[in-house]
Amino acid sequence: MQALELLLTRSSMPRLIEPGPSKQQLDLLLQAASRAPDHVALTPYQFAIFADSARQQLGEIFRQAAERRNKSAEEQLAASQLPLRAPTVIAVSMVYQPHDKVPRDEQFASAACATLLLQQAAFAQNLGAIWRTGWFAEDNWVKEQLGCGDDDAIVGFLYVGTPAVPTPIKPMKDIANNIKHW
Ligand SMILES: Cc1cc2nc3c(=O)[nH]c(=O)nc-3n(C[C@H](O)[C@H](O)[C@H](O)COP(=O)(O)O)c2cc1C
Image 1 (cartoon, rainbow, N blue to C red):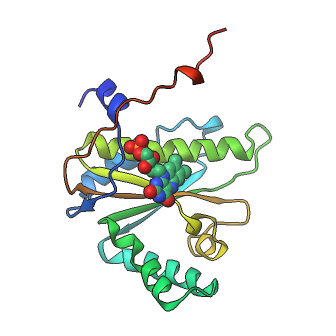
Image 2 (image 1 turned 135 degrees about the vertical axis):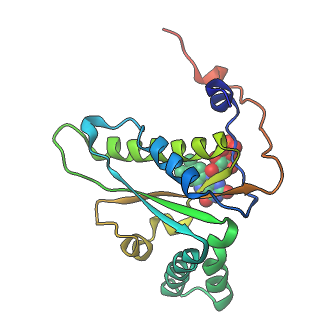
């Protein structure tokens, strides 16, 4: 896939089936993520990879979070099954590193860029991916279980796998009103 084609057609795919990314494909995702813009090279992110049976561990963390919020048994079960929506789930966290030149927002931006690059590298390899958050990304129990400190944040959960059908490419958005030439 040509670079511009990738940039101009990247689309999310929620319907993901086996197989998930191979080790080689996953390595390329992570290498692409490491190209994220990163002020003074703090690498302010962490990728927690839940593939195959490890997804059950993430599901259990989600279930526990639901239980701690007094959600019903059905809601807890549903939460536990969310990570099964793709063969691999990558939880991306922003790991804040105090630095006089790099405020926290910049570090979050860097981790968000890394998440997009993971998705683009998946798309470039004919995999599908979707960036999800939900309340789990803000939940203190989930954050703690994923190793986030008080100043860290979960940027998202990238679900990755084989598209169940060819990834539909959405029409271009009209962003003319979002652009101002000075
Ligand atoms: C930070 C962030 C969180 C998101 N969380 C969710 C989510 O929890 N569930 C969901 O269906 N889409 C979520 N999305 C949106 C999808 O990732 C996707 O961008 C959207 O469906 C539009 O599709 P597109 O990426 O093909 O334009 C999120 C996007 C971002 C950037």
